[in-house]
Length: 221
Image 1 (cartoon, helix red, strand yellow):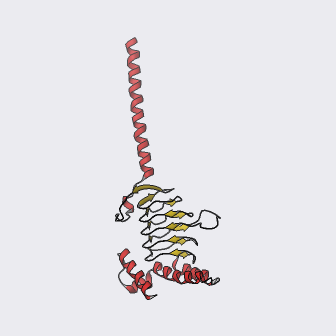
Image 2 (tube, one colour; image 1 turned 30 degrees about the horizontal axis):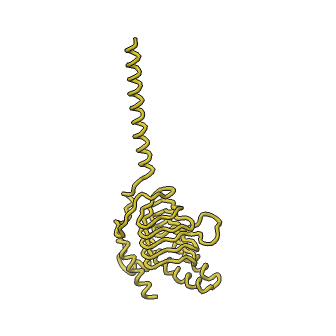
Image 3 (cartoon, helix red, strand yellow; image 1 turned 30 degrees about the vertical axis):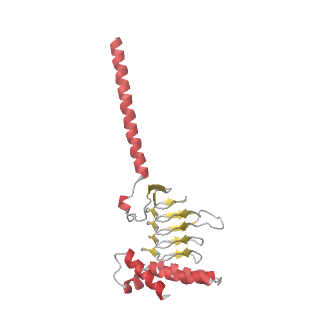
């Protein structure tokens, strides 16, 4: 237990430059509280203890604003930054070294049964407000931009943005740069820009055709 707590503290110091001391983390980091509480509720859940695991998770939700179902499988060095509004469903699976920001949902798409929540690989970053829905698999070293809605599987080493989520970058290397929301591609904006350029090109062609036609008509006169 103490080793797990130390590992979680080390993770926060590594991922959050605002973390100044162990005491600050222990007292002021809801993500720290939520993940440790989940470790306990998940252990009880696996032991098939009735009601108590859900009750513990609800207490944790009340104090932290983070809801993690006790059935969710969470890997090592998982860090929830800020945390308010994070929801992780019962059949969700999260790999090692995963970072999620506030408002993230790892949820389902309806009333389906069985594996209805996503599986996240290792070294995944999920931006603020992003939604990953359904029993899909998100590969290793994937980055999901803030506000994205992902409903389809994503291969390793990809960057996903938009609604619905679209892959805008792929890499074969594990050492990609960190997720920088200010530098993410804008596929919808690029599509609009391409459309504007195409319209301008067609307008120019029509203008040229009209001038040629008028020139012929003048010549006949």
